[in-house]
Length: 286
Image (cartoon, rainbow, N blue to C red):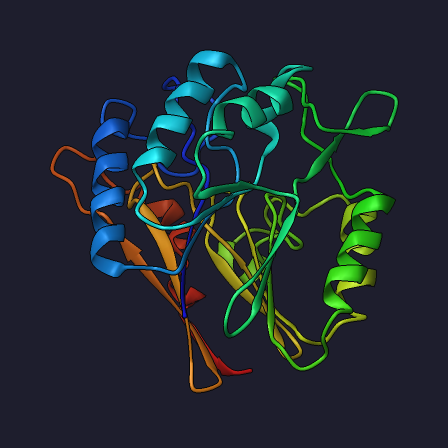
């Protein structure tokens, strides 16, 4: 079984905005075409898009995202990130635009695969009153949340089996990049404590969950939590245009990192070279 994970494409982004490495604005169409071609070569059983597919959840950009997803040659599971949800009707826009793409599934969902279960959640975001919702106001610091309904659903999905490994994908990460990795005094982009604790309470009840996938922080990092690995990914449209390939074979789950090399792509900012996350390549028995 093979799964590919990419995240934080930010279709429609301008040169400003949050980025950890330079985003190749003019090269986004070429990068998307190259990714679709690489998927034909890799032949994954499933592609997971980890959120922030667009810069704003508006019709023009969601249409562009749907056109990209339509070109992918495999079943595709799409998480929604904060940038995907910038309008009250963004969720409806996504559902409408993806309705005719039979190979595309919008989170929240579980997909049973032959060798494991894949679960995807749409991260909620706290409004100014502290209520979780599927909308984010651009310019406000995004505070991730997981709802009680989602934790119950996650409990139910993971409780269906005890001996099949499971993978969970959502946009917001469960951990910050450790200080010893990013070279700072504290972890980089740690999640809101309430979100982390609520998510971990349900996750840790189910040891069959062996891998979590997320984006949001635009930095690649793999953190071991007992028998589980928590992996965050870089922004695909930022140098060096990375995505992750997850293979499950003979009870071994392996994660490898690939990148799309393109002439004209911006140079790497060396003092943030840790963003590439070379330690993300992992292999462990499930």
